[in-house]
Length: 254
Image (cartoon, rainbow, N blue to C red; front, side):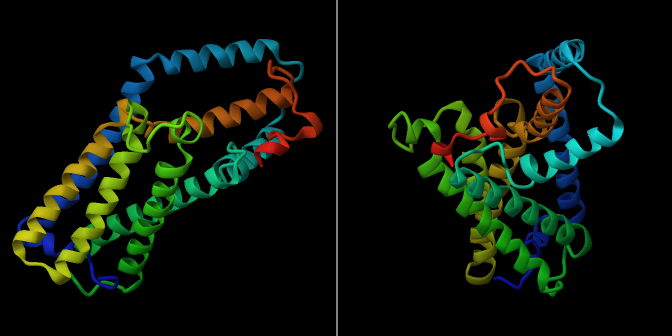
């Protein structure tokens, strides 16, 4: 299971070309969904207006070198290590989900496009695929059951779902069905493989197609917003209070 191409069995009833076309289609769906979200909720207009107002309030002009330094800090702190979260548990859970999903996605693309019908792929690919799925599940379950705001602070049941939970729920269901699909290829028959393949494709399609209504698109917005915040702090246009001692997080939240 951990060293076998999890997509090989699918080629018995789905051609490699269709599998590759599906991945391309999901990429297009994400782009279109994000664009729809930007235009429908007028997020793009709000951001451009906010940026124009910030430029008008700026007390000094930033040079290219300083902007590049701020971009590097944003990448290293706000993006790579999820520094926006003061609570270390949220940072770790999001890191597991993000890097696990990137690992899963990258290895999935490699196996579907390069080795679609070959069960004997380089052993690193299926191993990393499984690690990616498991890391995503660990981080996602940790967040879903113990770190969601409505569960931790409002005292609601973890099973009480709202629209904001669409992203995490569909992500977890997609990862669970992916892991089960890999398992039934080793221990199950043709009917079990087809059933799990159907569930996997359904939940994965729902995950990508729900971009306009879930928090999926936020992963694209947050780096931009984080960079904008650092620019405003540097040029003096920020209307937010300056953190005491230069710290963004209160000690009680670390």
